[in-house]
Amino acid sequence: MRSVQIPISDETIRSLEVGEPVALSGVMITGRDAAHKWMVDTFIKKTRQPEGDDQQVYAALKPILAGGVIYHCGPVVAGLDTKDYRFVAAGPTTSSREEPYQGDVMRHFNVKGVIGKGGMGPKTLAACQEAPGAYLHAIGGAASLIAQSVKRVLGVHKLDFGVPEAMWVIEVQDFPVVVTMDAHGRSQHAVIEAQSKSALEKLLAA
Image 1 (tube, one colour):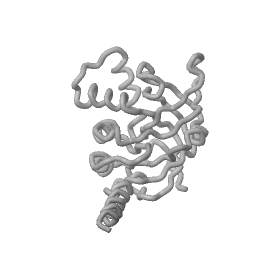
Image 2 (cartoon, helix red, strand yellow):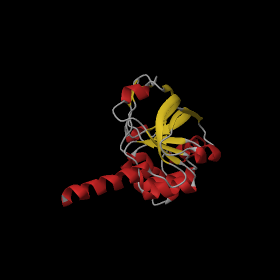
Image 3 (cartoon, rainbow, N blue to C red):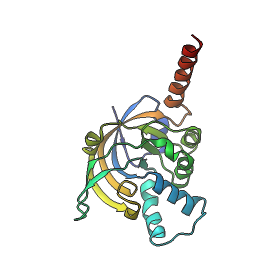
Image 4 (tube, helix red, strand yellow):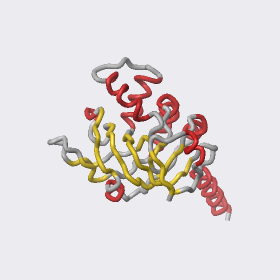
């Protein structure tokens, strides 16, 4: 398994290939539907005006996401009352819901890695080539195991979105993922989809 430090350089991202197992270490941020829609609507497409702490959060996110990683995850978090936060479970969320937003977020914030499960579509694959970036598949059903790689919760933004949808800033050590979409236009998800479609057509024709 190859060790990769966050922030990730363009050179390192371009060297990653589909099928390669990677252990990530460094600071990353979680973000799901509410976070992605907020980033795109407020700061990229600007279809809504910033309000409340929006500008402060944006300023805090920019250096974390530049060369950084965003994780599609709705964690189970202990210590909400004391603010001594600790991830109890940190499994990946299905990534397809972020397809309308992910490419724009990658380009705008210079995001290098996107972690989730289930893969993403052509818009994100195009952004992986342009940013450059990579989609990194996490292990579904291993939420407690993955949480063990989260060494510290450094902070949280937009907790008013709810615990699963908030943007948690976390420090990880040897976070296990597999490259399934790379910066060269290759997608293991597209390959599997094509193979499955072919197999289904053969079954239906039999």
